[in-house]
Amino acid sequence: MTRRTLPAIIWTVMIVVICLAPASWLGSGGGGDGPSLLDRLFGAIFGPIPKDKVVHFGIFLVFGLLWHRAGVRVLVTLLGGVALAIATELGQSIPILERMTDLDDLIADVLGLFAAFVLVQLWKLRARAPDPGPTT
Image (cartoon, rainbow, N blue to C red; front, side, top):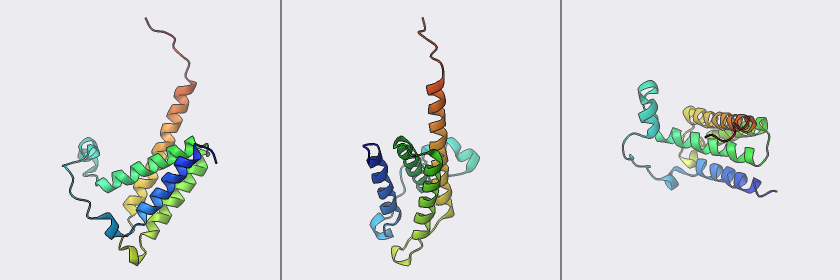
């Protein structure tokens, strides 16, 4: 195990623990302080975006970036991330957890994974771009 693998493993375990924690551990979540940034940016186009979907998107975006940094191939990361997203959503249907499976959460998870893939590809393109040299 490398130093770059440990953060990815810890993040993955945190996803499992948070997604499969009983509802009573999570509290009510509160109402927040008005619309989120995504609501303000995309609300007119897509309608209001619930904060929990932003969280799902974000945790799987980080998942994808951490596993890429650990040296895992993109396809393996995408497939593993999708499997994790499906497993955690199905796991939430366990009655004792008092949670619900939500297709929108799964969609947000997968979109986060694909956003990580896009970011990685953009970084690779930028790294291959020729250096324009000093500007004066």
